[in-house]
Amino acid sequence: MKTGTVVAVFGRRYEVEADDGERLDCVARGKKREAACGDRVETAATGPGQAVIDKLLPRTSYLERADAFKRKAVAANADQVLVLVAAEPWFSDEFVTRVLLLAHAAGIPALIALNKIDLPGAQAARARLKVFADAGHDVIEISAKGQHAAGCTALLPRLLGHATVLVGQSGMGKSTLVNALAPDAQARIGELSEALGTGKHTTTFSRLYRIAPDATLTDCPGMQEVGIHNLDFGQLEQGFNEFGPYLGECRFANCRHDREPNCAVRGAVEQGLIDKRRYALFCTFRDEIKK
Ligand SMILES: Nc1nc2c(ncn2[C@@H]2O[C@H](COP(=O)(O)OP(=O)(O)OP(=O)(O)O)[C@@H](O)[C@H]2O)c(=O)[nH]1
Ligand SMILES: [Mg+2]
Ligand SMILES: [Zn+2]
Image (cartoon, rainbow, N blue to C red; front, side, top):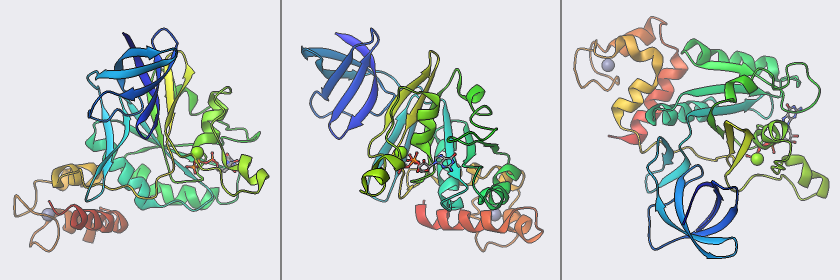
């Protein structure tokens, strides 16, 4: 019997790093609640380097997303979400907003990092991130690759002492960042396969990397869709920090900030106190979760 941490998930197979350092190739016993990257588990050996997961230990946090049909684990036991966007390719502010909402609902603080500030698109990306900073989110700038002065120095102190999960659209530089911070990581990055002429080398499964004795970084595959069906209406409205002062001020206690008369949130939008785009995203999400 060994206790350890799930460091990678491949469908029904799990890689577990036992607390004594041994790497175990595991399957789950029976039909269990699914383990996620970062989960603490108890395993029982079945052969050299092989084991079954007998038990999932209690989680301190659980980040998940959900479409209309299914919940999907992102990571367990993370205490920080790092949303990575880049100067290029174009990032989706809707994607970022969705991830921030999931993190908020999971009770995990989030940080936004703008990567590739060495590229010409940086200025436009910076401007598009202002709305997140205005809404109270932390935004830092990095360059995961190359000799740019800022490098990752702004980021590293924010990662030490934390279990961070790295989330972002494909191509934002998540794997490049992991490689910059954990040189022996060899996370697969875009360029490797570009050199082989086989297109993008996109990450296909999550893996947890140790970047310092007290810090881990989990590289996730770039998500196409970030479903937020696991959120209820309260989690949605509270996930928009800047709505805070207006919640509870609407005429109706159960106001959905749609077309109700005397809606304080809509009033704030009309007065320019809440960003129009943020409100439009809120409306999209509200109609999507229908709860
Ligand atoms: N110029 C520049 N390019 C970068 C930087 N960081 C990453 N890249 C490049 O961006 C491309 C995509 O990087 P990846 O690390 O594979 O991106 P990813 O977020 O892991 O993508 P998925 O695995 O598909 O989700 C690669 O060609 C990297 O070399 C940077 O700071 N500056
Ligand atoms: Mg990747
Ligand atoms: Zn309202």
